[in-house]
Image (cartoon, rainbow, N blue to C red; front, top):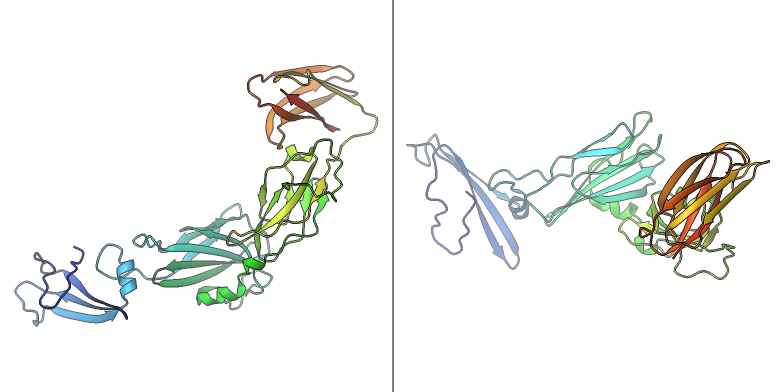
Length: 384
């Protein structure tokens, strides 16, 4: 039985069928323009005994209205402890996993926020925020070896907030020393170590290293978005026959290994930093990516796509100067893999692969890549 709400002076009947031998808790809540007060009294009575008898008693205490009414899980009784305590561990792949002690399901406005920091010191500080999530439990990884991670669980409610932290490190000596973000701590500490997202700078020093794009890390960024610009910077020299526009790709590090479909395309790229609250920086300067043709000495390849343009029904003819297995991949304009074929070649002997995709492919430009164990080369095909 939950409580009955009544206002006004005089006696109040809360329950008509109370039972002997049970404990009852009555809460009196007074609401004013200046705030609210709560007072609780617990009543226990045995059958045949008066309220002042030896087998009955009362116990009264002033209580916090917010926590009692918001965190009673199933009606009157002991409130759920208000804590952000959690268990932390690593799975076999090196991913951080957690177990939350209390989800506070009775209070739907409760928010569970998780903040993951790294630090070169086992006791913490200086901290770098690398991830932020909301939810009753948390997973992240795999984490790097010999780097100290500090995970903070902040529970935010209408009654206030509480913070609890733990540290973890993969393949490290046991953590030693006091840590200001470990166990329960004052949440105001986070105000001094969480970056100000309004001043998040744009990434700089964009570079291409083979099939990998890199840039300098941005303090306060938890992830990055690699994308093509809406317009091309006239100062960017990118001698592409037909530059593609890549779909935005998100990465948690300051580098990106290009998917195979993009390794053979030419495009202009830029990077945007993402802060822990989801806000983004200004985009970086633009850079050009040119694919590297991989070839070997004393070899030659012949490839043909016919007809070109076509309606989706086409033939791939390929020939090499050496025995080899060839993989033929078809990618769309944005680098998405559409189809793959594999066939064996005899030296100087043309081989034809037929593909009837009429009615399956949208009109547009596609790229066909031929790969052997010695070479990789691409051609453009138009579906009309």
